[in-house]
Structure formats: C-alpha cells, structure tokens
Image (tube, rainbow, N blue to C red; front, side, top):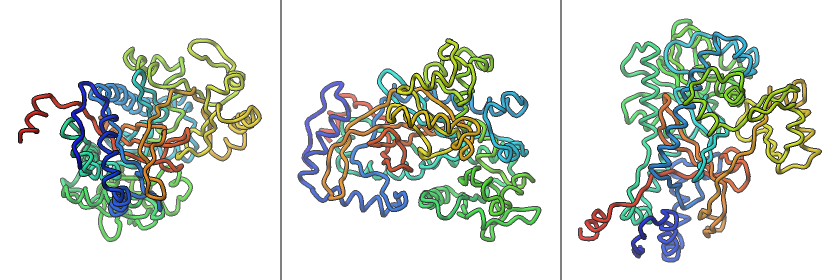
Length: 475
C-alpha cells in the first residue's frame, strides 16, 4: 500500500489510522470481504454473525492503561474481600439478594483460591473520567475471541504501516488466563502438575466456538482440555469424568443461574465440587460480587467502614451510585432521599436493570422511555412485582457519561461506511490483575455482543521515538 505521511508530533492515532485506511480501501475494494472471510475461518462468530464488522481497533495510551489498571484492580480486590466478609456476616450477605438455591451453592466448601479467577469490568473510558457499569465476576466470555482478533489485526497491511510510526502492544489473554487457572488450581491444593482441564457449558451456547479456540491454545501450552456439556459429565462418588477423561480442573463457563435452573443435568458437576474432588474456577462464591447489587453494597454509606480511604476514593470516582429497588429511605451523595420518589423524579438520569441478568436483558434506560413506561418498570421491579418475580431483585443506577467514536463499518454490500458508535471498554482481570480488554461497539445505548453489538481488539499505542522511525526508513 502507498505509504502515508509521517504523523505529526502528538497526532491522534485514530486520525493516522484513517489516513492509512482510506487509500487502502480505494486500491483494494475487495479487502473488506476478505477480512470478513478470515474472521469466519478463525471461528470469530457469535451464532451466524461475525464479531467484528469494523476496520479499526481501539487505541489506548500507556497513561490510560495505568488509569484503568489502578481502578479495576482495586475493584477486583473489593470483590474478593466483600465475598469473603459476606460469608460470615448475615446482614452483609443479605444485601446481595441471592435466591435460596443460589445461597446453597455459594455456601458449599470451595477450597483455596479466589472466588473470581477470571472477571471483567464493563466500563466507559473518557479523557476526563472512567466509569464502571457492571462487574462480571462469574464467567466472562470473549478472551479467546479477543486475542484471535488482535492477531488478525496485527497482520493487516494497514496495521503494518501504522506500526512503522507507533509502538503497539497487544495482550496475550489465553496464556494469562491459563496461568491464572493453574494458579487457582495450586491454591486449591493441586494433586497434578499438569491437570486435565474441562471447559464446561451447554453445547448450544453461541460462544462454543470460543471454547474450541481456548482448547487449541491451552493445549499448545501443554495442558490437555476436554470440552463438554454439563449433561455429559459423570460422578462416581470419587472422581469426575468427561468423555472418558478424569478431570482435575474445571474452567466453568456454565452459569450458576443455569445450574440452579437445570439441576439434574448439572448434578455431577455440583457433587464433584461439593466433595472437593475437582478445582472449579470460578468457584460458586463468585456469585456474590457478580450480581449488580454489588455496586449498591459499594456505594451504600452504611458499608463505608468496610473500605480503606484509597478504596473509598476509587468507589466515589468510578462506581456509579446504585441502589436495590425498594420502598426505603436512603441517600444520594449524602443527602437523605425517599428512593421511589427519587427514581420517579429523576427518570432521565437513571437506569433500571435486574441484578442478575446479562446481555442487556430487562434494562430500562430512563432517558429513552416515557413516564408511563418508567412507572410501569418501577412497579415491576419492586419486591413482589412482575419483573422481580421473574428476574430476582432489581437495581437503579445513575446514568454515566458514555464514550462514542467513529468507526469504519463493513456494510452488508461489502462497502465501508464510517459510523458513530458507542464504545464500551471492558478490562479482563485474571486473579485480580489487568490482563487485557474486551471492547464492544454499538449503535444503541446497550453495548454488548449478545444484544447485537460488535467487538474490536484493543491495543496500547504510543508514537515511536524519532530516531526509531528514522532507523526504519534507512533499513
């Protein structure tokens, strides 16, 4: 491709990327279709859709990465501590509003290791703010897809030209995830140096192709992996087996909600867990910080004594005000309020959502509905209401600033259009350490792949030093 001009000092990497991309699209009009075929060949699909119909990654600076790391690692630490404290504090435990059958699983002996070996924070990163919306402490998907997508982008001609002017760092998510799983296995009390791993979820889930990616990557790192549906597992009272293999370590992707809803099919897994015959990551205690009521626990003034000054500063700066929907007196930024009145009077600044759902299920954005629908949503979300009976407790959360950006989108006719998209940056945390990012784009206010959004890789970038660029030009 024709080389672009050298970026000016301090030039935005997005501007430079677009300067490189536009002539490429003119010179190679079939490039977008080839890109989509490569994604399908790499199993980067969610059902029948490709994950990434976009031709630009997300770029963050080293400073932004540090900002995200500092805040998210503290949040993960809080998730672990609160989960541990809640096990011995009935009053604190009750604030998470788990169902009785979920509590039974949570209280089973888990062995050593963290509650959440793998977790993810849904966040919006802006120049002057970083705000979290949710903490996925149970079974965050997408790391296998994200790493594969990053590798494909690294080989694009536009990226190779871009790399002449910018230092680019990508994230080895699979290796870091495997290290985290093995670390938890050892903490649990490992009996084998090379465990037989099981990745377990329902065969019909649209993310099964990710498990195939992870199996291939883990086995390239000398850890054998079996993929199985919960109904294919067998428990003989001493050992858990899947497809004839004795299992040592379970990477659990089947959700606790499903384990509760389909107990017969999940019985072997639960019995092996209860007998501590296998290490399961994430263990069932992860349900405590996973529910969205976790943010209500963090932002309730009565719980402030649980946190250090540094932790409280992170909560105040990055966690939006959140409350469980009830007819109660509470506070907003220290000011006493009647919660239901506050929800009604501040509709345009609030979101209602179930505490324990995913994929945008049940979310009502106050600024996108009329007062009649908002009131109906409030009534349904109250304890005993229709939605509460169906989904459990609901939370109300203050609206946060969202990031938007223009991205080159491959339309159904193969042509590329620049579209304004919502950008959700979701950091992965493996054993509490920032390990990479899931970055989702959406044209609506709900940014998730499940509800129809797209995914792009994230790279840390910074301009190369002048002498490095000059050296490349002379080589």
